[in-house]
Image (tube, rainbow, N blue to C red):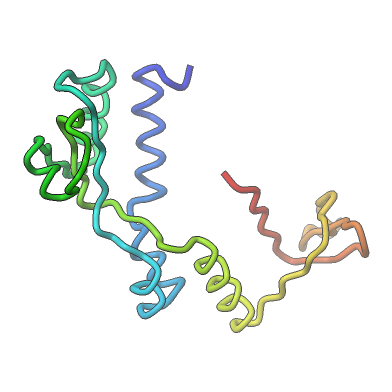
Length: 160
């Protein structure tokens, strides 16, 4: 159901709002030096065999236009210049210059943890079993596998 065009557009709106300022946020969290060491905002390339576009291509284009995401079509010659030795079966590509990637996800996580600790945070290796709002409404009791803890604020980070 999430793959229907109306849902894809709504989901793309939410994803764009979440990711619009990604690089600026990473730079603020990591600091400029670590950001430049770990992040590569150099764009991304999608590639396809053959000349025919998929049925989803029109919807992908609509999403890019809706969110003002620049994309540059690449032909076989441009792809060979960018990626020497790429298979001759690859006939077309799309460069999305606003994208990027990290060279080391583990170092990013480690860097964030170091910054968190330096700013007075604490990392506790326990299993949180249950969150219970306190009677006064001023925080939570966190039931863990070791002791119970009181916290004014709790962040639940459960991955994707």
